[in-house]
Length: 407
Ligand SMILES: [Zn+2]
Image (cartoon, rainbow, N blue to C red):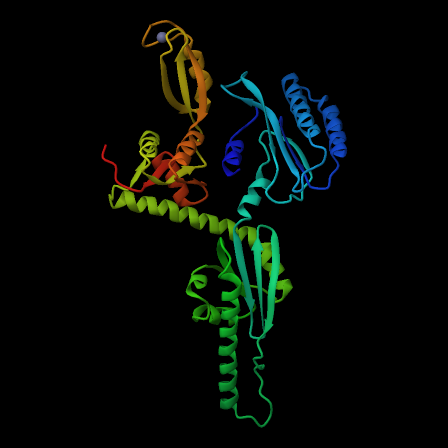
């Protein structure tokens, strides 16, 4: 699904004509079909003939697919349809995709846009990752987990630590000692609960620590949690509350936090590659041809692909003698190349019969090669300095290798 979505993410219509439809579980098929009939009617107002036809074709395709379902599956249903240019303008072909989500979707959405709306399905993939939330102050602590948008408060405990003001008649030093001891006991208890709750979670991506005041920092500094958990603290935040309201505060800021976490991952991935290049270890390579070669040799441990590249691999075939060659070019250069090709001779038989047989996104092609070689594929955004560097200095295609290659 991840790969399918990455593939869909790169598809673009000529105009605003790609249909995305998300149907949550529990919707009636007939109700959705009625909505689509309305949308079909509305589309008849579109001025451009080509766009109107493409939109209406896309809606018809979606209707046809939907009719195959007696009822919406238990997690809902997602359909994409639209005319996708294959080899430049005029080469559009209707493509339709149907997904049954891995988990229930909770949006009902119909959109017609230049791109498919895959973000809700993408979110579900990310949902596999879980974050631990630990909020504490001197009085209470709460433990929660965040999986995608699903938040679960696991436990809330109280500290038993007395307030800062001693009762009359007690010696100040003795009171302070007792309070310190109670606090230490409390921190140990929080650590123990954290270990019990967070350690068994597979795919625990990080822990967010929060709460009002300095207590959380005191806790962070000490060795109260298992070191594995301690190393997973990704953010320490001030919140006004420790209870459920505090967890809600974290949730509001979660998208930002998680985006930063992804950027940190991306930075690390590129930095690892840069280290190999800088130290001349022989365990890194870059550039389309070099990386393709390394992939074919099964040598690539991690393939880094910039989201900022849009190059295609074109297969040219002579219809007379069958001679084929391949060329790489930017997507925008494709139509010009096709026009030029008509007047060119086949290098083998000299006939003017060269045609474009296949156009493949290079990112897609390399990702496919990587799959066969059991390689990790990482899409790197251009949001970080490292991501920019990957795109601008290394052509957006780089690899960290398992072993050295001798050319
Ligand atoms: Zn030929």
